[in-house]
Length: 388
Image (cartoon, rainbow, N blue to C red; front, top):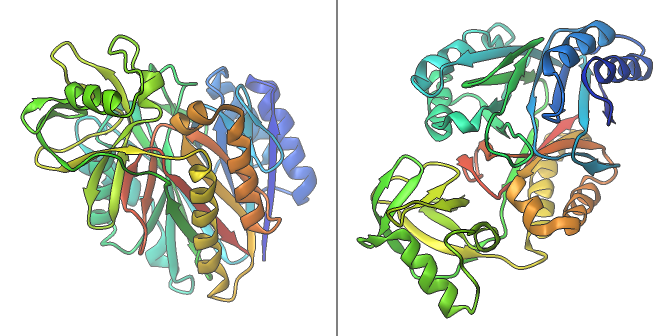
């Protein structure tokens, strides 16, 4: 049996933690097994977490700062939501790994050292929520390192912490501790599988180009030409305005897609460097094949609904019923859609068939699961469905 309580508040700091924790205990009739927190950067996060742990009755907590928060009933900025889980057929462990900018493998080992799946063979399904300080970089390598350290036996989902689209400082939480340059994870071992779905609604709008030079997240050249020139040409060809000094209005509708065996992995451009390179929100490797991508007005909602249906199908195919869900989508999607982002949330709610959900707008999305786009993404809807 699984009980889930989801609450959201516009209170901040200790007041928010006490308010949310009391509501959780009232609904569940006691302390939860685990808490998942997505909190506006307007909080004193340490004060919020300490009060939440005190009032809810558990320190098995993971979470992060966010760039827009939502549940199945409300969304906005400046909010904090908490998902509380108590389950007889699940076990949880919270873990943190530090120094991801310098040693992703060591951070992954710190995480996996706290996992307890091997000691619970009666619970055969293994997954983990992973939340990362994406501003520290190397999120793709970190997901690979976690896969290696777990021998490919865990499925991962999650996202990158945010700071209301300022791209300056983001934080992840484990227990009542607040970290930067770190990753946190909530291990979920269960009798029934969680469902994980990932989709995006973007399609190639240009011919493929070779990434001929890049430096971490800056694509310096495409087809041996400064990368910004490809965006100049695409803007002219499609009658769009591209201002290198103020490129975000254009970049929100024209992102980079890196070809993989599973489809295009998306990267959001953030700016143009002095040498004509394009700085992206995540790494783009030299030698990759890439396209400029486009999307229609309803494609994000369609992709989110399809991701949700994929996740629900995984739960129901093993005899489970969706109890609640976690939903992650990109801050760039919310900025691009504006008020129409509510339609995407409605599409997720409809596909869940009434099960509640919580989530946040993230700086990148994480998924590592069979049949899904694996790794670290931008502008991709990721859904995890918890079974009953």
